[in-house]
Image 1 (tube, rainbow, N blue to C red):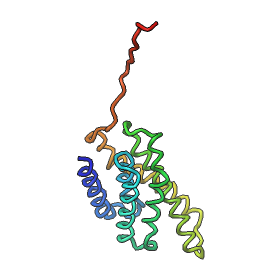
Image 2: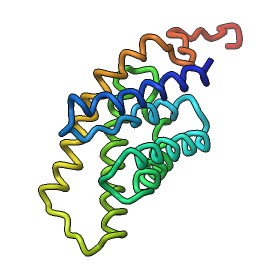
Image 3: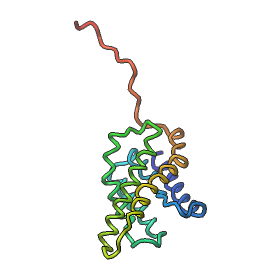
Image 4: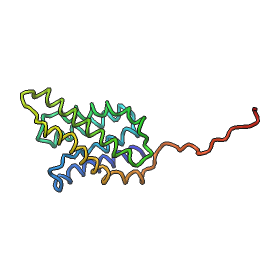
Length: 174
């Protein structure tokens, strides 16, 4: 059931990748970021890394802006760095997916900036571009995730069991 839902979520993200640039061509949206954040809570780390590599390669194939492999490397490094943060932000809240996507987007844009600077150091990046890419793109992705993916929280319940609200101890030992 989990694999089927992940496949549907991947297909949903991929269809948004193909359709939304027609309407929002100026926004730099990371269409697979909510999917990858969702895999943090449903998959093992190695599976999330493989999915990040596949998503990055798909974005690399459809992108003409950067060198081939920059997205794949950036997605994989971001998943590697953020995967253990899932232990601090619990899946049960509806705000977790947008918040983790915000962190994912910010870190991914920062890593892409470092990778592009490393591979093409002759090009200088203006401060205005860095601010727009790091902060404005992160806010766009926060809005995108909230509108397109947070509704899934209600359709696919958490795998974690809730702890009982009242814990009763045996009084016969005292």
